[in-house]
Image 1: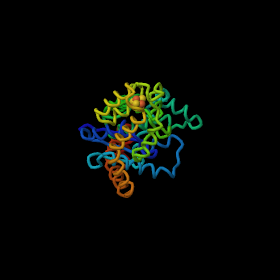
Image 2: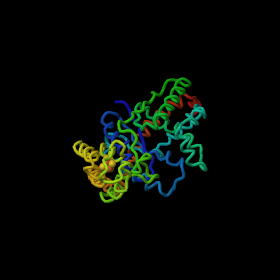
Image 3: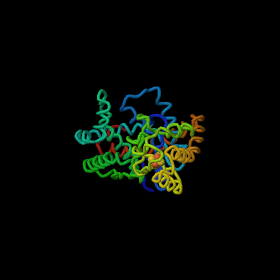
Image 4: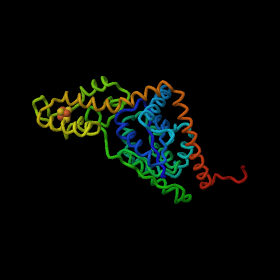
Length: 329
Ligand code: SF4
């Protein structure tokens, strides 16, 4: 079985964008790959954060992983900061990665523009840490969004440089881009994200989902209920296509284009569809959340397993880069 690595930064509760864009794909892939799903907390400190919130964020992220269907028996569910090799390999890779490669990464430019007063080295180095995350496990498959593909390309370049400099050790990772693509938020403009306040969290009740959807942006040209709409330009129709049954999707298209239904009815239907899929996840989420020690044990066990693989790889790296001093036993 090929190995797969992926992770999400713990910044609080996960949302529908995380679920559709990452978790759902991971759940399917864990059947075919030896998978490592990591909570990448080193990545979450490259922007301003509150240290006393991380405990809650990591716990909630783990509860969301498990409640969505990641199987800690079949796969490894780990916590990055409990596996020191991630940071150690990053340093080694830093020393073979030209700064110019990192400066051209589009997400660095975007993030630097957003946090001009905090352009720290971690922000620039993020793709090297991501490379270390992947290759520590010699993972060949990395499920990513399209916006992450430049990072995978960079990881491949770093791997090539390492292998040609020190000797063949790492396979070049490949990005697996899901079919779903970018999930827009309820503003219909930006990618769904917690910081933009345009998301539906996985643990929200049906009433909360409805409250958010009732205010969501639809086809901007559809002013009145009697105006026919164009579902193909409406973000909520995109969500229907991901969450609703085929018959309902057809009913929405027909009702929208003929002005047979209003947007509120359409939003009610979408609320039903989203709630139907999220209800069992929500239930399990709260069960896990009430058992933090059990969730902690799963992370400790997963991190131990990950550590064994990572430490073995790092030993091979140490040998290759000349850290195997024969007078020190
Ligand atoms: Fe969008 Fe539905 Fe309104 Fe059509 S009826 S514009 S698909 S919300």
